[in-house]
Image (cartoon, rainbow, N blue to C red):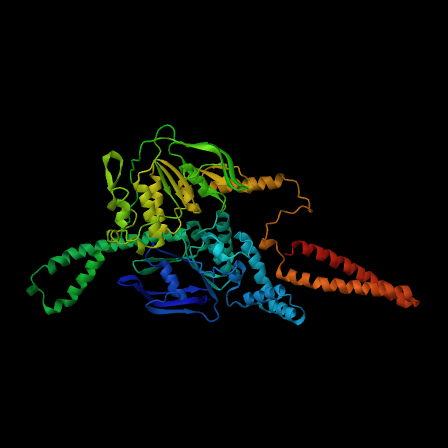
Length: 627
């Protein structure tokens, strides 16, 4: 039986001025399908998602959702209300469970009692509010979102992005559109999100540059290329294989078109008298053939024999380096002497100090303890995750030429600014465009080119893969594989790290300030780390049941659930009623002379005392966690 379509799209077309992004796209998403959309930056991936969700309607075509389908969109701009709290932003929406939960929380906050509180409690039961709350506790804990009373406007861009992601995951829609869902997540968060989405029943259409994510989550890949959508029914590995086949077929068709065009060109060059009116169809066919013959399909490999500045014997030395802010230590006692050609990856949770460590290495900051010694011949190339600040009106070619006119290669060869732009997927028609009209990924790529044009021999890349498409990532990887100098990479892209680094530094592991050094790439580090964790669990004695892990202030995962809050609110009056009944039974017992009545009172008194003890213990337990 064929699965029903959650989404149907027919004849979708979108232009920006004279620029055609896509034309006459027709496709559908079956319920439960896990799909990704891949394309080069600037070709319309995010625009297509916006057209599907009605944020920016297409010029023509139709988009229809199956009856009753609930959908949600994670855009690159979180779109949160900066003046409201995290919790209020999470509550925003038309979902019945969200409304029930919000009403129940409000009733508790306002001290509602009796029928008003019961109505809120019943709504939680009726609309599945308790399940919603349980999902919220898990998702917010996994995404490290605590202290939910904070105002969103005071948070970093990464935190706001995680709040927006949490919101769509908690609501658990039938169809979910995700635009770069792994941006601003640390590696543990990405691994959890990967498992969560792969196991869910939600229909997905996502844009992501994380190739392991594509491999492990998706069962369908859509490629947007030359205004056309190509379908690949498989994961990322299948897509790579079949894309090569498609390109080889396209090359063969182009070559045939060129051979045919040479023959037709001779006919077209004959005098007009030789072409009768009956030949109009042949003339029209020639121009169509010419268009097919002129298609550029080759993708130039990025093998560039760089010739960076010579490196002396002393490169960069870290001597017992330690750093932190206020009372918080990030890392301590770090000693390391970098060697020629060393390739290092740095990982750690958000806020562990990865970018700070890079700033110490290049001399932008001074360590609190120890010292950093930089060799005289070291030329740093520092790519910051925040990107470059391009002046208004600056053109693409000028941004590169203001650094240098050319990059020196081995054997005395040179690579001009124009050639380097083309190698990094900036065709010539883009060279005189204003930078302000570029996409986010194109601006990041241009910033990277500025760094490389300085001809560094010690390259430091802080999250270079954010906002880059997978084709640009392949180009960048080929370039870095040929880079002969030292290389340090901070990245949440596991595939990128696996290809390029030889050992891993881990910051903040198990809450320690010591930086652990693991040989091998990221996958080898994870295998070693997980094996060490299993060994530690096998060797560790069982934990005493009375010992509890320290709680984080305002940690949502440790707070009372809304059902527990209701229980806590009811325990007070219940305990008072039980105490009153106990006192009345005790007084009656002392005055009664009826043997049968005494037996009844004693039995009931035993039950009341037992209920009272249990209620008081439960009240104490909940009161310790109540805010």
